[in-house]
Length: 391
Ligand SMILES: Cc1ncc(COP(=O)(O)O)c(C=O)c1O
Image (tube, rainbow, N blue to C red; front, side, top):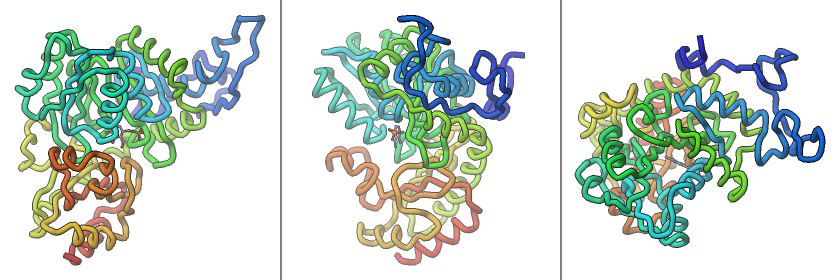
């Protein structure tokens, strides 16, 4: 039986020692190889293929092997952050004058990167579309489109696109189709099985899962694309993942499926509570039957994830008072760790978007995003309940 025949829960706990430097010592946990350089057998002839950590590191190699197994991809490239993964993939596809089509609801940091790197530096054009409606993608795409970039569900409004349908449209003009799968993770969604050429992740979030390591990953079945990303990362950007972060991510991956189950159970309970609350104007969670894309979520996802956002029937000042009153939830950006976090996108995670862009994409002053952790759901509910009393 090859590793890929095992279930994800089993794959997450495994560490294939074959061919690694610990095959003789029988370690059950991959060691951290901190050496930045490796002795050569003779000039220009490396030992075991390792020369210098920016180009290759044994701990990072184990992580890449684990990530490719977990995501069902032929190759994984581990990067210094999700942003480094996004930059390396974009630079491996987009050339001056190219046209890019992107979901208008993508993470604000990705949008900033596209505007700085692709538009201002490269001279490409990026067209943002409301990809909840497939027609907008069909209409935007042209023969000059080299990249179609989707994120589903989006950060922070949890909007979805039909992954397979967008894949068909991208394929019709031979554009590279990339999906940021950070929110759903390979536990709940597998875009490579729905036509994506490449998947990117911020491993800083659920894959590491403990808010103690920055990282990113690029997953693909296309070996030449993976080689290009590896080259860009190693030689041009220098943003390969450090050995210690590789180790931390490997450690986090062991409990990844367990954590995802709990994140989802808690998030579903909180979404339902918020949906019933009279002072909550709208709840964004694909698991709620009233989410406009609930049927699509059921069709293309195996679960709905751990992030919920909601619109309070409140002013900016009242919203601030609610956030400050929370106790179990920590007021902080990011998501995917074991602890519950609360974010005010307008002033925190999406604060660097221009006001007009924020408004156009529906990020208002009364929008709150919660990254639901693995605590006891009752404690989270009680905390939200007492904070909402400040309205
Ligand atoms: C959906 C999504 N993609 C990418 C990123 C960027 O990841 P990183 O912060 O690891 O660079 C984030 C960060 O919040 C994100 O939410």
